[in-house]
Length: 265
Image 1 (tube, rainbow, N blue to C red):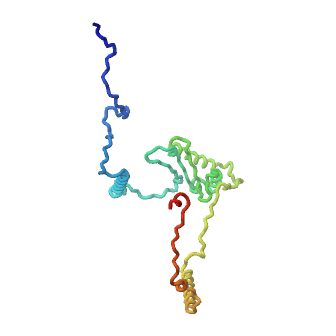
Image 2: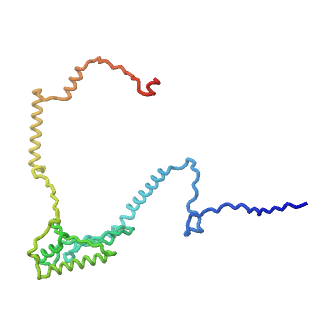
């Protein structure tokens, strides 16, 4: 007798596939923050209702801030002091709260050439000619901006140096630019329509309008007394009286429709 030898390799025990962890490297070893969704049993609000409730909570939070926190800001209030004549330059910055923006380093400077204390009238005219299209003759304001550098401080320094260079050039007595005319072709003046003075409701005009309305009422009353004024309500009532009392009623007629639906009827 020969023994039957089973040459097949031994069967390995079954192992379930590993559960894939999608939490990432930085959350390795931490518990899952989001639990599996429970079965909805009809005892909760819908997603739209939860959104409305969250909006209501947010509104109440801002109302509490307005009631309790905003009054405390009055302690930080400072009185307004108008700018002095020794500081004619007005710099404007743009700040985006809580985020970085490529337009944040931009700085804008505005000033009136006549407010510069170191310039005479002749030098002021030369300064305006040097500014070119950056001068607005309607508002008499020079406006320049700079965003060539990465920080607002560098752009402000560049604008300050540019204004100093223009002032130094305007004070140069070698050439006064008196033979150069002003060129304001870049400024397009917008015509604003003015309210006619004849339309202003003055006391005299009020009396004229009241007298005119009183005369119209007297004229209408005179026409009513003479029977010359037509009353629309009276005409409608007379037309209704002339209509026949027993008007024939039209019978309802059902026509046969087209197509298969009409053939089935």
